[in-house]
Amino acid sequence: MQTFRISLSDGTRKFHTVLQAPDPASAHVRAAYFFDTSKWRILSVSLTGAVAA
Image 1 (cartoon, rainbow, N blue to C red):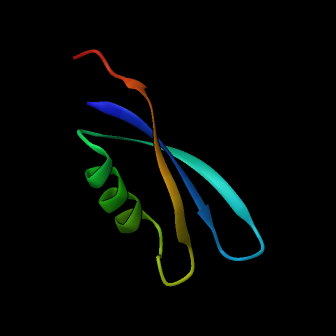
Image 2: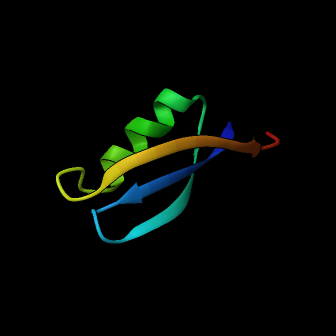
């Protein structure tokens, strides 16, 4: 599992969160699942590190 930093914005506000996923595509899908993408736009998904099993 890897740790990804997700940046989101609603046009006026911006925030970051951290999710664990096996790859960047999965992290993007998880962010879309947890946050209402009709309101929050995913700006970036960046790798922050790996998690030891």
